[in-house]
Image 1: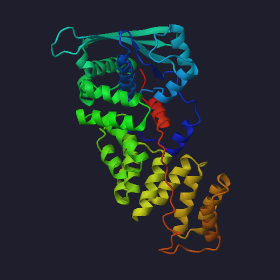
Image 2: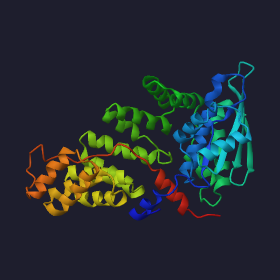
Image 3: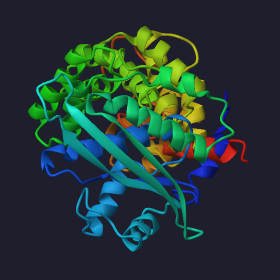
Image 4: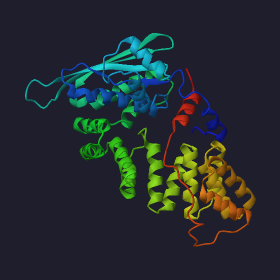
Length: 394
């Protein structure tokens, strides 16, 4: 397992966001006559991006890529020139581009087949201004999921041939998904209305219960709506091979915390912290430990501060935990550091006053209990970058 020290993770946060060998995956152009099939181009890009990221290959996140496309006024699913592809890569700070096109042909007769699909994918090495390999796949439209997995495996194998994962193992980690479930999921990603997103993701999960990605999305929708029990149920269904697995665990721990199940929350956060020692994970781990009465909260808060000393939440929680242990001088120092970053924090000011008067916590006093603060945002981009940087090269 890759072990990251606080110093190493903090150091990578000062680097440029993306590296020279980072891949930007573009939506595939639709050569078919029907624009209703544009979703397939999105599905190809989504599958490839997630598969590459799951293997530790540095990729430009979808939201960053889409922002670049908007800024450059590039029409989604457009057939791009080589110059346009290079311009997108430069603006996304990516050294490699994975793009292509597809053509779907509906079935002519009244048989069981839904038609056929032909996919062309190609790499462009922007730094060396040269083309990479081109992959051509074709098959039945109902086998789109398996074709995407095959394309993902070829892409991973070319980008990182040193990875120990075998093709059969890769395919087991990405089981095929029925076409209607895949379509509902991708259309859910493209939808803008929350109720429409929920309906499409729920349909995908119902049609293919083992399909992990819509479960993650349904968990996110429910946690935003503060339906914490429902959110936890969906996050529990996210598979370990899913790129969102660690994030799902983070939000599962958050959901259980807000449901009042602090011991379960700390157990989940402990698991996440062992894999991804991000400051927000360590902070929430510490908060759950504090509320459950378990040992280790102070250490978790201290590690979060070590990684990101500028965040007032981490400073506040460390000060609060120290005050509860009657370590008044150290607590006052941490609370002052928090107030330097957030001067209008009334609770931190109140606690600082308690520290200066060496006033201990009184059990049952609502002004003194359950004051720890959680982080609701999860961002593992820095961790993924460092993991990619430390991975063995050819």
